[in-house]
Length: 139
Image (cartoon, rainbow, N blue to C red; front, side, top):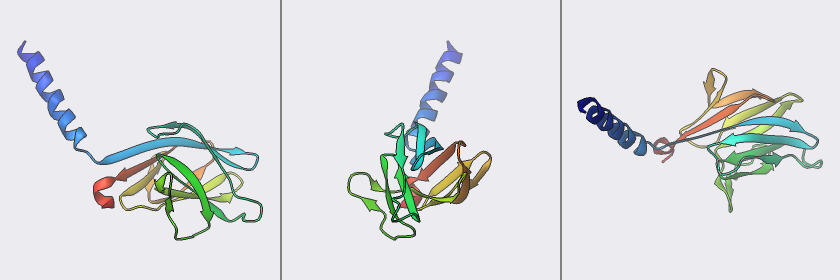
């Protein structure tokens, strides 16, 4: 009985620590589609699949996402707010036919691909990326 009580106390303590945690995290896998990129198999986001791309008249654009959705802007445009989805966490631009270049747009953001963690990172298509945002650092 004492071990069960101790286990419950440790579990409650851990739950309290994590409940106070202000880190949100979501992951997905970018894949090539005919006219852009598909962000698929999302976990931890309010979406599971997003198809984004650049119009032919604006091939140098960024695809921006957060855990609520995504949108497109001109490359390096300073606007970072979408009325429906709020500020983007990360922007993606095509580096070449098989790679996206990703960069954080919010303070407290980090990107993880494989074992590499950075605020700017190249993402091979078909490779999972994790976006982590420390909300306390973003304020």
